[in-house]
Length: 324
Ligand code: OXD
Image (tube, rainbow, N blue to C red; front, top):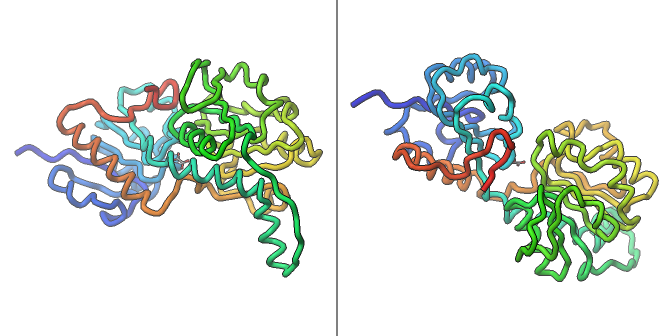
């Protein structure tokens, strides 16, 4: 029997950190790396890299240690931390955890819409002050949700908001015509056509050169004063300074942000203190049990890799996302 292929797991310290991994020791020599220096050493001679921390950007810094890698699996939906020129230009295959987070993120966005419409943040803060203050709330049926991004997460959001009677538009790179999940689809070049009737603008975009600053002052100004912006994709698709100005000048009514230009969001950042902003720490997809689900999806691919079969969820590295 020949030597076992080497697999590096980055972002995990022991076998127990990756549920179910132990079973694959028979096939693989498994090395763990938790930081840049251990990653550099571990990668020498390695064929597979399992990136367990989707946000880690260590790989780029130790790229010169890579000599035998053939496949990298990224344990997140967004692979932006892997899209550096050395990796993009290489023939190393890149796969991701597409699909695992769709339902949880759909529910999270629906929850945020309800939180705004039903004024939950205000209710919780009044409760903490023991204040009995009766208020009216909004209904969400018939309201328009515009989802920018049209992958699996966007579709999950679309199905859930439709189920509660909202209208939903899907904005993608190109118009797709009739689409069961969306009441209307349009190309991002035509986004302005629907901003004026949008109640909730939901961003589910990967971080690529094309999405950088996509929503800026002009787009925010085109929204209604009652509109809210929800970002669960990547922080860089939204111009944060323009958003702060739009909120301050009451051009829009609120924002819920799960992702930011800088993460963790610095404690002195103004977003923490704005009444009309809901801040959460990049957690919209992370449901109880997501880690075993992510591991399971990787093992499926590992079995395929070993058998020489096509891998699932392979990223088009030039585009920066899965292209079905
Ligand atoms: C991801 C994320 O990319 O959580 O998986 O943002």
